[in-house]
Image 1 (cartoon, rainbow, N blue to C red):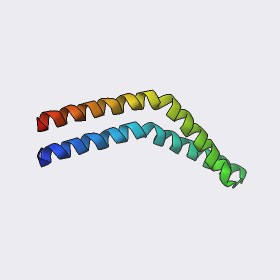
Image 2 (image 1 turned 180 degrees about the horizontal axis):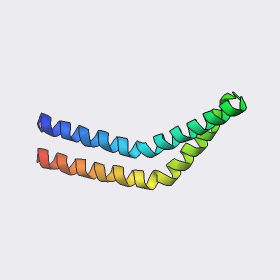
Image 3 (image 1 turned 90 degrees about the vertical axis):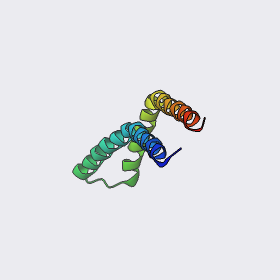
Length: 89
């Protein structure tokens, strides 16, 4: 396995990591913005008010998106293993 092949594998893994984490990050940003807006408008600065909704929403998104995430990660793993077999074999 040469450096070009290693760079290609790392690129694929990082791209997949970004794709899989994107829904969680986007939902967390939207919820954080909404909670911050509500806190600013109502002048309530309770720390748990900003943390609990994010945790609940992230948990819900993980439960909904978990089959899709696992499917993508399993496909990536199978592709990487077949590539290793091809490069080393």
